Length: 199
Image (cartoon, rainbow, N blue to C red; front, side, top):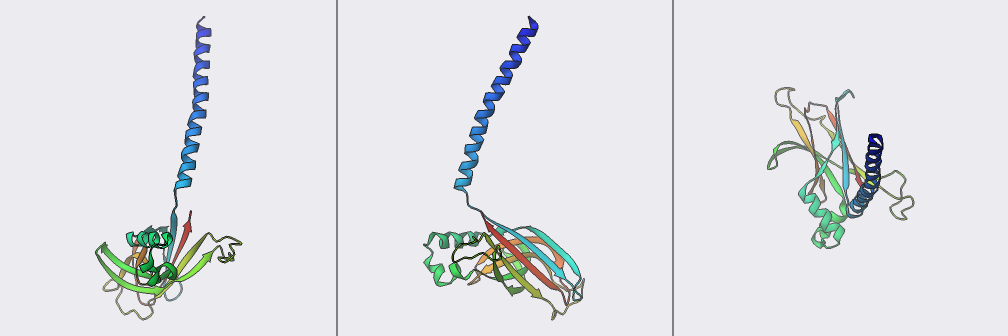
């Protein structure tokens, strides 16, 4: 009799788990579909490489970036079609204009070390923004900062950067990378590449 009762209990538990699994899967599935339908993200991944004058790679940082509040504001104004003042400043059509290296203490206290023009590349290479055949799925912004003319003594008065920023036409800030602090010495070359992927 005990074996029959135990068998019945086990069967009941198995049935509840089986049916419960269907309900939980259905709820999770609906949740995921709703999340996908209601979300829009602009992911960015940055790579910062630094070379000495002889070409030796001495610094490399990789990581995700964050849109600054003004960058979100510009995106909202441009994509909604309402941001006419920004259109007059070419912010909606000019794209990322330059890349900055800064020594940041806090949000209101930072020093610009140097900046470079940013070159935009639509991705994947070969996609056609005109006909959408093939489709474009993102873009990269690349800037090279050359410190060949820098005059300083390493370990004494050479600048140190700990943040990389991008700016739109009109110098509106777009996004930032908080990177591992690194001293810059005479002759160094810093190459920054940020890849953006809407999803």
